[in-house]
Image (cartoon, rainbow, N blue to C red; front, side):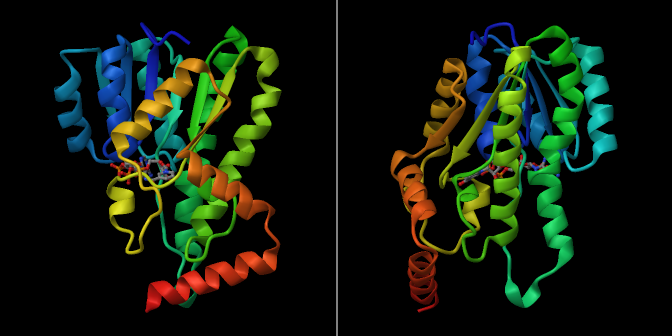
Length: 256
Ligand SMILES: NC(=O)c1ccc[n+]([C@@H]2O[C@H](COP(=O)([O-])OP(=O)(O)OC[C@H]3O[C@@H](n4cnc5c(N)ncnc54)[C@H](OP(=O)(O)O)[C@@H]3O)[C@@H](O)[C@H]2O)c1
């Protein structure tokens, strides 16, 4: 995929991976459409890259279908079309069993799963009619298992990964490419809040370089870093009892 001249949507562009994607993609002669809820951060980012590429930003909440529809209409009025949609917005809501509640679960699914669904619903009719387009969904290597303390997050990312895997095949005959990006730990405001040691924590600059390379190559799944990706594959095949033993031990270590 040649990115030059393409209209690229990035959701969740105000910080972290989305922000870095905008910074790096600005060097690829493409037009950038940035969204997030914090308008002032998008404004500052747009000022930073405006000399390199055409950029517009919209304050928009991916979990709100009406808001997403309004944003889509504005984008189409301004740009005519979207070529590549990088659906990156996400939240990491910790799951505390002593404060288990539906609101946190709905919020997490609302952004990490329905945030993708809301955008894909709008993108598909035009993409299918024109037999073109690329959907890049950022999920996580945490989609592989239900990791302790991350129940809502893992469930939301597994749902998103399965959705993308399923429609990838359905959309092949329409020439629409669906890419799933599964990062391991990447240093961003999201992981800065973690109090535990994160194995193979990667710089956001490097993570985004890998993502862009994978998008250009049109890889179906972009997962990194290699060791974390291999480890999650092993964890997935592991007997349930061994998984429980290893993670109970890990939790004890974190507490001590
Ligand atoms: N960092 C990691 O280690 C890691 C690992 C695996 C997967 N991921 C995934 O990578 C993606 C980016 O995460 P990050 O690490 O860059 O985290 P981050 O720095 O916290 O960025 C999250 C982005 O999502 C946006 N966002 C959150 N809720 C939103 C909503 N309701 N509507 C629109 N935008 C919303 C935030 O902007 P506003 O708050 O301004 O709306 C922000 O721009 C997420 O999907 C995350 O799950 C991250």
